[in-house]
Length: 396
Image 1 (cartoon, one colour):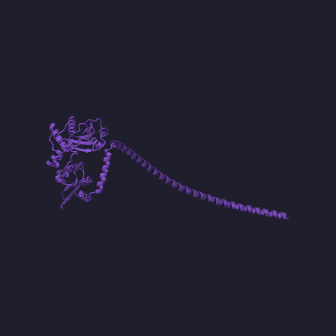
Image 2 (cartoon, rainbow, N blue to C red):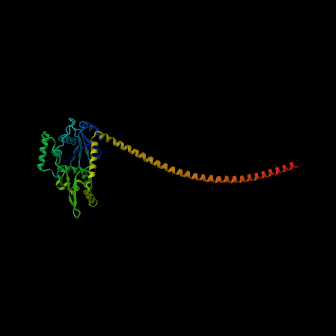
Image 3 (tube, helix red, strand yellow):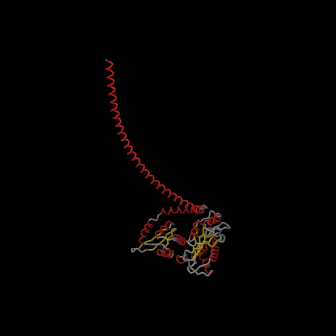
């Protein structure tokens, strides 16, 4: 059985992922909710017990080999025992079973805040403890003994380092040491690369992602275009891919981590990234991560997560309304243009008609005036004749 564990700050995002996978099924836990939204609200109970805690979300996955399967009650029993032995004996948790791969596996989402005292479950050397617990579970449940991919593909700390870490861990537990021991830089770098390669990437995308995490990557090509290998520098320490393990070499990233590399497509991009480590991008990304972490760890995280789908739905409605309004406006604009054209044509016709009508009136008036003028001339001539006749009669 292979186990993997990560820590985060937002319950809702993880729960949405666990619920959204094909054939995902909520099979166990100690909570009352039956969907991601309800469970996220319920996880607030433990979160309120320790508002200053950071990275309170615990995510573990347990996966069987292809030829093994367990029923739901056994999976629940195994998950509960795993959590208790990892120190989660008074914590909220749920178990999802996934069937989207060839390996029967479960995912555990748990709060790292204990319900009995509000303290955080210690994570000192938790990867090593997890492997020890899984090996014992395999023996107790008659499962195939599996060497973890991390053990096979990465170089483990030396015996001296392991003894020192175990000694410092005991000192911290017994109160003889004020702070827990730090894991070796080498192991921290391995885990950082593991997280960076969790999804399918191209080689340039991986280089850029590591650069944004503060890792300096080096890679060279021979004259024949063959890779010379890859090396990493982090926290002022340098490691070759080989020293980290087979999965961290240039071909190992492709074979074991699923990184897609195509020389003709990627070599120039990789060279540009190595020449320009994007220091400004690193600082910007760190700033963005800081803001995102602050928002994610605040108590409004789940409320925002619940509101966003509603806002997205409302935005979709607004978009549809806008599209319909734009269509209606376009139709109105077309109709208006047609009407204006029609109006212009009518106005032109009326103007021509008015001109023609005015011309006809002017012609009629001209004829009438001429007639009146002639008639007036006749009246004046007749009047003068009568006046002369009258004056002649008075003289006689």
